[in-house]
Length: 107
Image 1 (cartoon, one colour):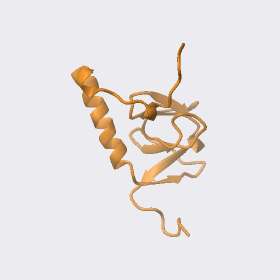
Image 2: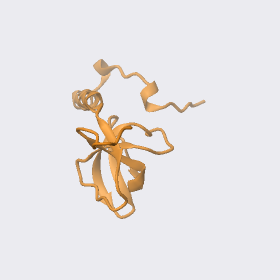
Image 3: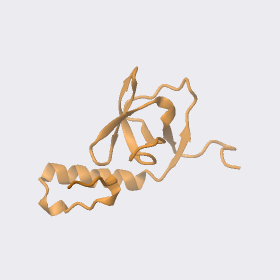
Image 4: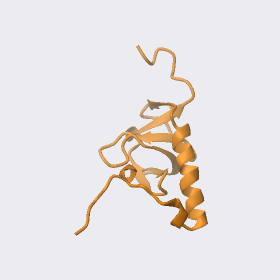
């Protein structure tokens, strides 16, 4: 038998991982903690750039998770997540991180 789990439903024993993988996971966890910013939708003509901090707004396991843009192909925007995995999204399925919400953004 096999089971499918949401990535955040799994715990990792960092002591059993190779050092480079352990560092990647610890770094990603720090990024996740820092990601508690404000994510806003973008205009349809907005052009994402590599290293933009984004959150997925989609119907898959990565919906609501923070990630970093690693590629901007015509077919979609490639985003790497905290677990090292990446997915390609339509630009309108992404929210971009801003330091402060735009004035009047929240009622």
